[in-house]
Image (cartoon, rainbow, N blue to C red; front, side, top):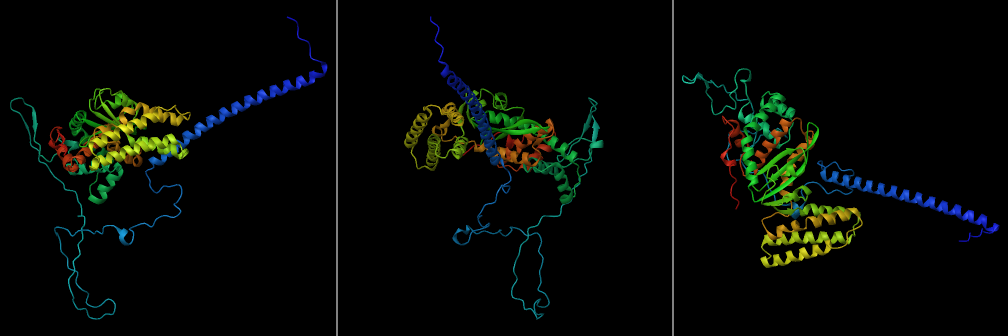
Amino acid sequence: MPRPADPPASDVPEIERLRRDNEQLREDLRRSEAERQRLRRENEKLKEELEAARRAVYRQAAPFARGTRVAAPKRPGRKAGAAYGPRAHRRPPTHIDETYPAPLPAACPHCAGPVRPVRVATQYQEELPVQRPLVRRFAIAIGRCTQCRRRVQGRHPLQTSNALGAAAVQLGPQATAFAVLLNKRYGLAYGKIAALLRDRCGLTVTRGGLVHAIHRAASQAQPTYTTLCATVRGSPVVTVDETSWRVDAVLQWLWVWTTPTTTVYAILPGRGLAQAASVIGLDYPGVLQHDGWHSYRYFRHAAHQTCLAHLLRRCRTLLLDDPGQPWVIAVKAVLQAALATRDGAHAGTLSAHGLAVARGQYLARLGRLLARRPSRQPRLARLQQHLLTEFAAIFSFLFDPTLDATTWRAEQALRPAVITRKTCGGGNRTARGAASQQVLTSVLRTADQRGLDPTTVLVTLLTAPTPTVPPALRTPPALH
């Protein structure tokens, strides 16, 4: 092959200039690509920070801790005129314990003139009684069996313990039940409970004494907790959810499994399949209502209902960044229409045939939306993939009207615990404290669901010679 001819001498400077320009353009291109990648990473980071900030707003427990004030706030209190609402007042009490006269003064307080009686009016006052500890002394008979020579000790039905000697001074069942309610239901710290009992009731007890009493209450309630777990396991429909919890500053998870009449909590070291199945079992055959977390998909024997409130929340969040995104708007419209159809079916304004037709339309509409090419936007693509994965569980509530379309039942069960977590340091200090937490909160929540007095339930547990299950908590009441 012949060697190419050299360029004319007059073209060499121009070629060198073009070569330098080419290298400069290549360098500029490399810098532009590096800058584009940097901006892409920064954009993704800012999106994640924005999403975290939005979640923090949703988790905000203090309603008045807003960053900015409302420019034109509404006037607090009742509205005037027809918008006032129903007028109400405290009803007169059904019984009177004490009666006191309030006589007229000897002279008018304004002009010092004489006062003539006109009538006698009535005012009621409902007051708390002055509290003082009720101290019981038990004369406990101690004997010895003439046959086996073992020691035998008597027990009164009001006793909460057989301890004697250094542990002979015990808190009574009512005081212990009150402490359990203050700590596990109302989220009051042990130091505040001790101060309240001292200042209001005249009962002196240390924080350590309260901890010991609450642990003992949980020990007495352990068989009841086991029974509640079995009840949930045998329920045809269970709603499950979880939230973060800390034990000795280590991140764990507070789980809840709830039905209309029974609730079970468990504080576990993870949020995977093993924890999700720890109460109901991996072979649970009923309907599992959940928020779409991937661990729940491995319950192969169960039917599923995913939470529409979570899906709608994701749609609303996406529309904050792109208000006119047509695909998200269409998905949101389908979900909202399904909820409206459910309301109509429950109200009796929609026939079974109409429900079936609407159900088919929603399945077809959502199916067409999900059949589109996946979006290039990562957040939209993730939602599309999530809806594809959960597709069979999105409209289960339209096939079975007894199912809930959302996980409201589990979220309401977790709400008191979340408030306690925010106000009392985020969890429990010890593993034993976490065990007592899950047992006692399960008993209290279930008692509320079944219309039982929690104090009566706790007193029954505390005064039992051996841990037993109260009859009202053995089997759930029938639903009407």
